[in-house]
Amino acid sequence: MFIKASANSHGFVNARDTEDLWRDHFDYFYREYDEFIFVSSQTTHAILSSHHTIAHYNPSRRIWATTFITHA
Image (cartoon, rainbow, N blue to C red):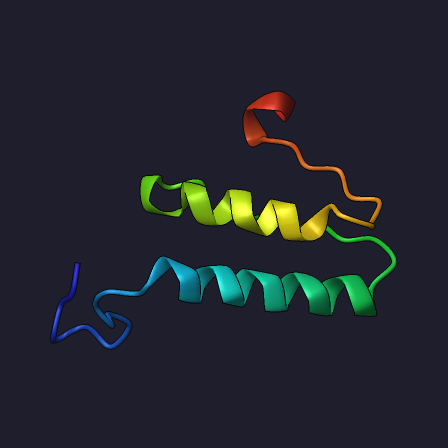
């Protein structure tokens, strides 16, 4: 929800833009660190983006994807 008076409110953000940000962050962490935990959102509007991002992670890398509920 866009709130004009709030400094951190920027209105609508395209899910593809969020997906690109996740990929860029993941690629940076993968390149710079031997081990890391990468958390992505599972909100209703971002579920498909999460699936696309996970597909980007897994092709040739040793990546393990899980959910929070698995570890609760």
